[in-house]
Length: 480
Image (cartoon, rainbow, N blue to C red):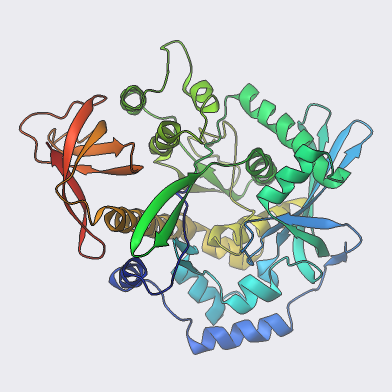
């Protein structure tokens, strides 16, 4: 599910940062790694398990990530072939460092995912691994699961292979820089092909009925004790890069289903009621959605640089609720087996530095390609993974939701009593006087309650801010 990304700039010693530190404590999140975990990670960093890794350091890989990222899961190399394209996609081989049943493994199962805050993160693995020895940093030889996916001229996957290999990235690029190079025509072919392949994969997504939500990142700025909140619209390069990851997740799901054992990322089709509510949100936000136009087509028409479109993209993530992980064995696929937004079989396998399940999916795919049984430690863990991932996802969602609440309270703390123009984008079924509003200026989505009558879902509403204090009181509005 797309996350509501928040990024913070400004001084370290501010009330909002203090409130964010308090949030970490209040949610009882994992803090420093235990000494035994750090010791095991340091040993693994010095001597990873490299048996069976082929030498693929001749392939000139590159990574594309935010500028400050150092936990680099993926590196790619793209090439044109006689009848299509070849995608080489290297994924950090975390299993080369994590001993099954050890302290490091147990801690990863306790943490499940990396948790992201506006001002930092709580990592899944110690930094000596996630930001150094296991990360696909430029100029470093690293163990990886190396995917080789051949595409035809229309971008359809033809063959897939994955093997263990040693790789070396040549360059660490960021999205803005990649976009500039491609737009200016200065990108060399491996990078220039990102647009060609990404565009073809987007066309394949449309053809199968899938949809990608390019949810904008929100940047929090601080100046003289006051805060601002702005959107950073995704670039086309963000979407092209995401298509390579989606391609790999779909290829991995196919490998697992063909072998008969695996774990899928599944999502049922959204019920009609959820779509109807989203239509009313679209009306409230002045999004043109004719009744004969499918949801996916509307989403593809949105411009995330426009505030109301960005807000609607946030609302669209409600249709992705219900996604989960489903284990299968002996070829008995679950129902549903597909991910409704991907519109195909799909699994998570491309972010093992930041997500627990990816390490296991990777091992299942390696076993499938080598026509052997998966390792016992993988099979033993599979039944518990869906529940573990559900709890980790719930915790990540709580961090996101509470972080957004803190940011909005900080943004509005000096405007208690002020009146704003808003649109009602959601109303609680069992509490029709309580719901969610979107305010254009500032760009805030918040709770409203206490009106004398049912809130007008999809309608305009004048609201008064009644409370906002980061760390103490969330932003709350009442009808004015």
